[in-house]
Image 1 (cartoon, rainbow, N blue to C red):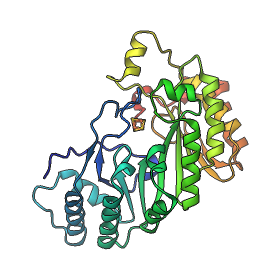
Image 2: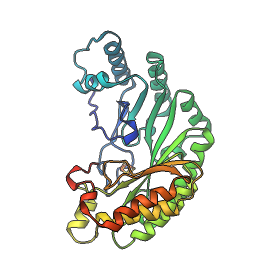
Image 3: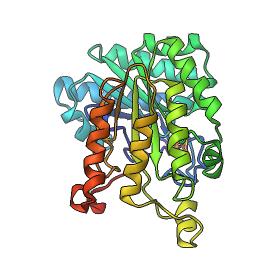
Length: 311
Ligand code: SF4
């Protein structure tokens, strides 16, 4: 095996049935001040090593034979996997060189014709680096959904957290994905602007998300990762985090201002204090009423306990 470090598994809630196959480790944009990947070193995995894992997975699924030297996690994941979905790790695996990505997808589909859907995290830059035709090439190989972190629709917040992308680029990336026919899932982070720009952040996020008009939208809640610049800023009193109930106010503002044509929007991610989900625009009133019930009572026991919140 090469010096490739297998990454921790961070995946969207809806990928819970997937096999997590690393092609990269870390993120090419390792500057975001709040992120676990801050300062991470991007590693590209050799195609040969990815293929070895696919072969080991096939051998295990077909004959229950484990290849010596394969990481234990491969078999842990394999034993629960139903053969239908694959999530390519890591933080922005779409940065993986395009010809290599095609090679991996072809190999995966050849060894597992049962696969129905392959998913990946991508930055706006990764998407804009690819043409519509290239994205269609991915779709033909069942890579049919991209997860993109908008984080905030407020350019000032994006700049403060060193996202290296503007809201305009996020919208352009979404349009390209739409043109190619892939599904897009877009995440925003409640609390990312802190207390001072909370309302602006929420309204701008709803506005940009509406322009992106994805099939899926998700709210996450800011979770402070030790060792990040955001953690340091909080310790120094330079960033004032919002309270759990303020995060629900942000969630309410976002849902209220969203103008989407057909989107499943949720706060199902483990970082959130409550779970709200529904199809927009149809279920907007129902979702707002659900948030209001919690906001009206202000009862902390209705919130996910701090210790059970996850990244
Ligand atoms: S682009 Fe995404 S994964 Fe990469 S450092 Fe920023 S928030 Fe983290």
